Length: 561
Image (cartoon, rainbow, N blue to C red; front, top):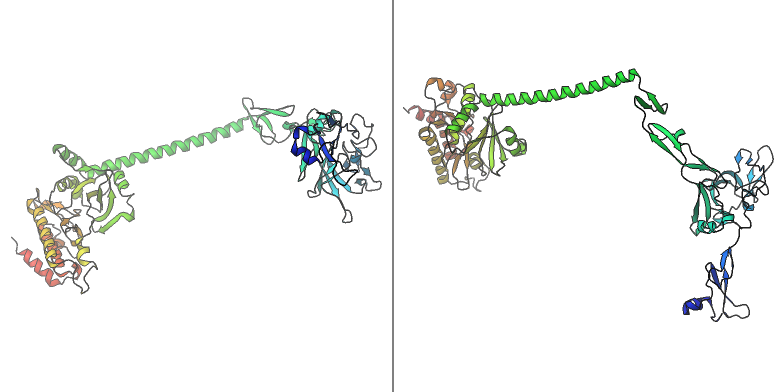
């Protein structure tokens, strides 16, 4: 050719490249000189023809292929207990190629071997595998391509791979006379290694099994005879199966793997089981219904018991009231189901929680303790009266909840603590002096006195607080008094029958006369306020005050008309 090498011919002017046929290759020509004198074209291995014309190289006929139709009859197909299926054989003319011809040694224990002495333990034509047994003295070549058609792949445990011919499926199909996958239900599978394609083998299509290298070698699999997912009537079809549900009044028996009639005993057991389930569901629903009715009845009973009906009548008769009634669920939501982390304080009359209403108002919610029967009947009405107190030194009562065993009260929230915390806390000056000046403490005492005077004299009807103490006096940022916790409060009695007949309050603040007679009067509040006033003046806790101081309070109060 006019180019010195194949590389120059391919690089300079590809249109002038002479090897135009598919499956052709280029050779540098240097037979008569040490320098390349040009190049020649030829066909690739397995092809022959004219490489200088388009499609000039054609596939060579597979001269070494011995089809199943051409093999001799009555070929031996076993060696001892090892089957030798086609394309392998034991005799001349019984294998597809001479590379597939094996030999069977004679003796008490026949051995199946290759010509090179490697012993074969099994042959699997459906997966292209065979078992090889070799000794350390034998140098068995793996990933080796035999002379014509056979490939032995790497060891997989004790197995090796083999291919029918060293062609791709596409190349093999071009030579129909040498194509190995002769069964109608077989297909070709390319076999590859790390070096690329090494050949092809045959396998049966899904739904078939057997030998794909012989006509009618791939037989239909009866899926209905095997374990399958059909819980009904199974019908085998070529290459697959069909599943239909069991007929009426029959059921699939997993042990017998067929549809069997439903017997009466099964019907009885099924009926009893269904009836039991239905009965349990009915009883559970009835229990839930009963619980719901019981809860509703209890709420209604508590509401009536705490004077809710009387309260509703009073609320209807007075227009423009801001006082409302809350449900237990609303207050549980406001306090996070009365979470202990929201507790503001605990006292003799109950526990106070911080909560947030739906309108974003911060409130103090008090769960009261037990009350007398008279208090229960008048509770709703008295709370309505307390809610109408409009005094700058009284914490506003917003609403209450009456549908629980012991009512709950909702107050205005004052965030800056109590008088008790202010005067008894550890926030003192370095020299031990109180943090709050004497003048401020007097101002606090004056405002507390004015508030009590308002409750006893100006409120209509008059109100007795019942639990006056420093812990029930809240202080805002400007040291303004806010008297709170009316849980022990009651309306001032108008006759002897209306006096409170049991003692409640806080030790250290209780009026001795009230403790002896169990009659709560306005003087009881005044005594308790006297103790608070002593706390303000001395900065001592009520339990630490000397008895002489308490006697002076009693003497002063007893001199009142």
